[in-house]
Image (cartoon, rainbow, N blue to C red):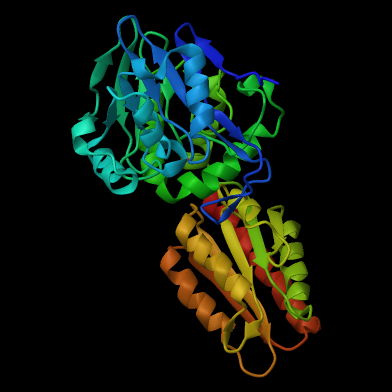
Length: 399
Ligand code: FEO
């Protein structure tokens, strides 16, 4: 039985030929993908020339080429635009180049270098572009906009000028597979999923995000077509979300992430949370032993404060708490405030390690509550007070 090959037209001559990866459950061996993901690729068919914008992940080459074949013979492709060299978008370039032997890979200078190292694409097959360069395909003009560190140093956007469609690759993406392509066709989970993606992929590069956001806005797109997740026919949805996440006002919110072995640290967590709430600030608790770390990351996007709780384990932080702190350091949320609480049995150490790891984040360290054994009335009261102090400072900070 023949299976239908799905392609979707974004505008006359601009066709989605990407693939859905319904079953992928991890990205970079780190990020959970409960809804899978997609690798979006687009054909731009001009009167005289044809370009393919981005490709797909290794393993999906045949699907991509079959989809291209529905629209045009692959050997007619003149340009393979590589907005980003990461294998989920560029991994199929060698297969495409075999099917399209006259094509050139279009990339930034850094992109050409990385394509050579990662995908063994010789420089002689590449066309190096600079910011603002254009390619005339005959009635369709592509403009290339350098957008470094979104998500690697070589990244760029491509704008289809006449149709005002922006192809920003990872930027504005979301990890979700769907049989619907457009943002107005998928369920309300889209923006929360885009936020979770933002937290893990874009948040470490906030300064570059704001530069990229301005570039995207200045190109006045009618459609934003990223290379993961839905295509935005209402671009203002994702532009406004990125504005808020990258330079909007932080929320009156404290993320309380903790791990506990014998409930002592958990009791302190409950008390800290009640102190924060009592001051009218939102406390978002995560028991790290059972939480999806990507949900923690998502909450950190607009939180003002983080509070870490950990018992001492062999002279230091519980490994789960240490892992969460290392991710915090990597993801660089815009947090302003931090605090620590925990319990130890005979010799401490977690608090000292937490202080050492939290100080370089640049957050104001509001308190370190380090108690011995099971918390009694006094310790619980101290934890409530710590929560109140955090909340009061949150309110002052975001005024
Ligand atoms: Fe979707 Fe940075 O690759």
